[in-house]
Length: 256
Image (cartoon, rainbow, N blue to C red; front, side):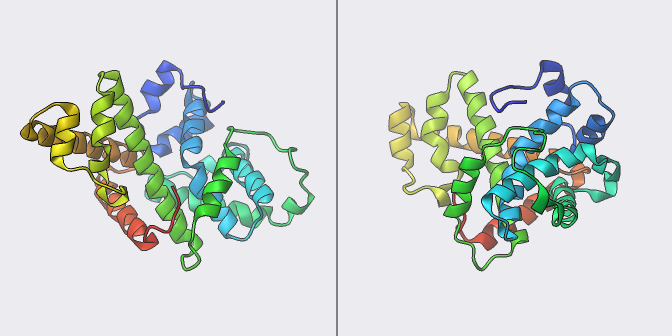
C-alpha cells in the first residue's frame, strides 16, 4: 500500500475508530480491509520506532531495514497471536515487540543484503533520517524519546484531521489563522485576538467563540486518536497524561 493511497471505504469505516488490538487480530485472520488498516497504523507510527532503533546505535541503512522488517514480522512471525486486552497500549505492545525483534535479528542482520526483504508498507526514511538528525536528545533514553515522538505523532495526526474537517466545510481560512491558538508554546508569535478577528472579519467575541470551538474539536479528535491505541476507553485519560509527561521531559529538544 503506497503513501498516497487511501483505505477502501468499507475498511476506513470499519477500522478508523477501532482499537488497535482488533485491527491486528483482524489482519491475522485476513478480515477484508484489515491489512490495509494495519498498514495505515504502521505508516502513522513508524517514525517513533525508527528513531528508537537509531537511538540503539544502528546506522541509518540498518535501521531502515529493521523497521520495515519489524512491520513484516507482525504478520509473518505470528506476532499478532500475542495480542491480548491486558497489553492495553499500542505503543507498549509495539515497543516491547520491537525490542524482541531487535534481539532476534541482531546476528541475522549482518548477513541480510539491503533490498532483499519484502516491503509491507512504503515509508519515507529519507525524511525520517532528517528528523532524527534534527533531534538534540543526548540526555534522554531511547524509551523516553520514543514516548515523546509517539505523543508528537498523535498531536500531528489530530491536527491534520482537524484541518481536513475545516477544509471540507469551506473553513480553511479559519483553521489557518487560528492554528497558533491550539499550541501557543510552539508558536513563534501568537497573534492577538484583535488581529485574528480583523483577519477573519468577525467581532472580538466571535473570534473567541471560533477559538473555543476549534480547541474543543481538536481535543475530541485527539481523544479519538488516543482511543485507537488503547484497549479500554477508561485508559484514554491515563495515556494522555503519560504522553504529556513525555513531551515535558523532552523539553522541546525534538525536531518537528
